[in-house]
Length: 139
Image 1 (tube, rainbow, N blue to C red):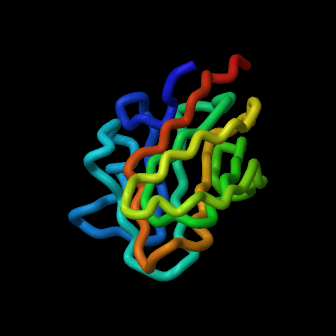
Image 2 (tube, one colour):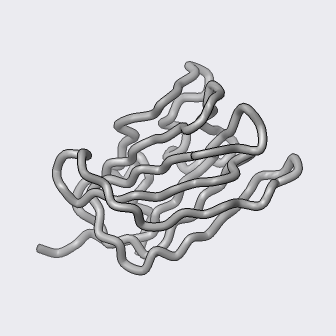
């Protein structure tokens, strides 16, 4: 298993509901927790990651701040149109520290992963890193 959500592995953020030039969505997949994507307020917020091929996801690690409720959805089709819920979580408030959540998804197959932040502990949230541990599906 390796992190299939790294930009250096070919992953891309193909949609984000907000963007600030100083904190672009691509920061989530650059491998550096010092950089991050920041929302511009209001909820829900979402982003879609696209992998180079269909992958089998074992678990997702999320490093973020001020995220309260988050939903993970998958799409196996070539175009990111029809998503199915994988799981959802309510995260514990970080009280000024980064939140680190490790989510087991037990082999969800996806070409695209949609992450929906339904609510936050503040008006603004940040995603510092998303690790998606998986392998390419052999066809």
